[in-house]
Length: 231
Image 1 (tube, rainbow, N blue to C red):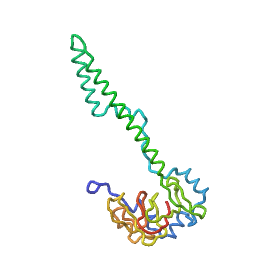
Image 2: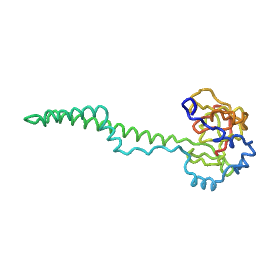
Image 3: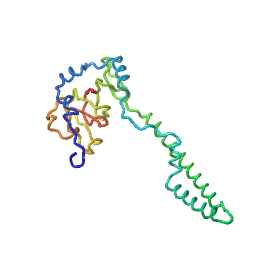
Image 4: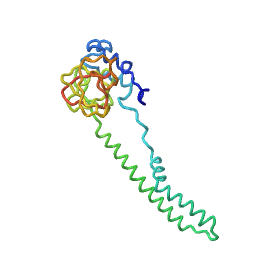
């Protein structure tokens, strides 16, 4: 641990992929610049699965219901109802349920309104997310092909241009004056220059964001056309 943060061994994580020259990298990972065949891509997709970050399972309807039922407002009302039950029913000579019924109606109304609003808004957001699924350009069978980023597999040759979202951790194969925005990783707005072969020994780097021939999933290309390989 250093300054309260876990120390990252950049050389151990990315040393081999970053330090190899382009030709040695292609040979080491058996990568063809003509890209994968569809058969190879399908086999790797079945072997490694979808190219997406594992997310929590979607909530079921009853999760939204109980969250709405025990919201801060309803919790206060339920607490008041318990007190009224003790004073107006348990201790009273003549039990009165009027106030408890009013509170119960308020709780039920509040719960249903919040539940339907939250449930439907989350469903709508999920559908919108599916509609705007991002695609990327890969080389398959020697041809440029547009595919969803979830179908990118190990060994894919990916072509990116200014404004493109980087769909996976990639090694740069071809680039000229390539700049990448890494604010999603580092919070810094300045674009970072990326090159085909590293200009700084990996052993001298303190952060993975300093690697100059590796691009990371979720960052984006600021300028120039480039070609990269998913590893």
